[in-house]
Length: 336
Image (tube, rainbow, N blue to C red; front, side):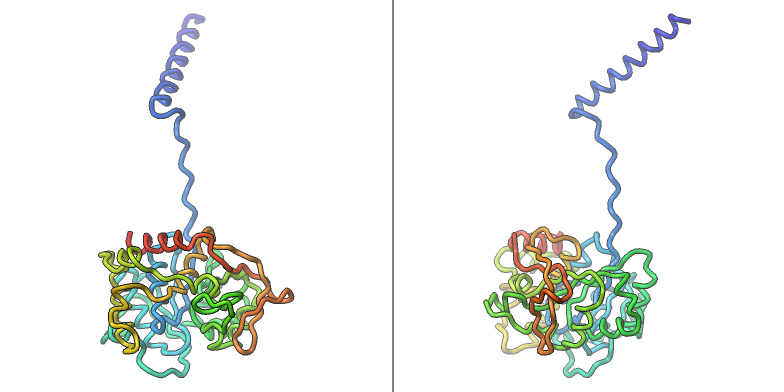
């Protein structure tokens, strides 16, 4: 029996030795089991898509971020049918009809919208996915019924969100808010004078409701988002990409440029417009490229966003650590 035990021990020793030698030959030690990927973050996008073209770029970027699980899109600030149809056509062409479309509040608005030529005769009724005629209620239900906290990404004026908070204040306890809002130290085009930024000054009372709600907030003001313009090779990579999402972004950009006779006809061949809203999509994921400050921000009645130590504190992207790096990341996501 003793000899048998010794023989078993010897065989075990040989097996362990062989395994060690194999590990060394393959590069040292055996690789540990890979950690499970974190679950995608559930998000809702509320946007005035179809006015400035940057909302379309932002949607394209969001669709190329697998870390974000898009649960609902809702058009905001009037032109409700136009915005919903534009969302629906872009989602359908991207193969994302799993995403419900919410029709926002039907506020007074004028004109057909600057991307109407691309939308053409698309009918919202033909969208194969779910269409919620009451987009505000759909937003509330999506947040309240989610088993995990929802990230609400807002990149336009926020009458929808103010209405949602009034109907169901509890959404602020089950969501965090990430958006493109304001001007803290820098105005449009890098001006040293802060400005009343569009998304805020269009409806200051709605923004005041959002900026005082008890959710965690992260914003990109003009200090960061107002500096993002793709030029040169970076822009050409997106313009010439065959990726279906990038193709539709550029097609919409061309329609947007053509709708304004005051813009240079070759604008869409040379460079992007200012891509304000893309930074909000990025901040829903990470902050590495940005200088972040925790600031109290108050919305004034005339649409300014001023620093106030007594106001609600939020994470504010007040500068760039690496703007070029962000642009490279944006291009890579849209074209990969």
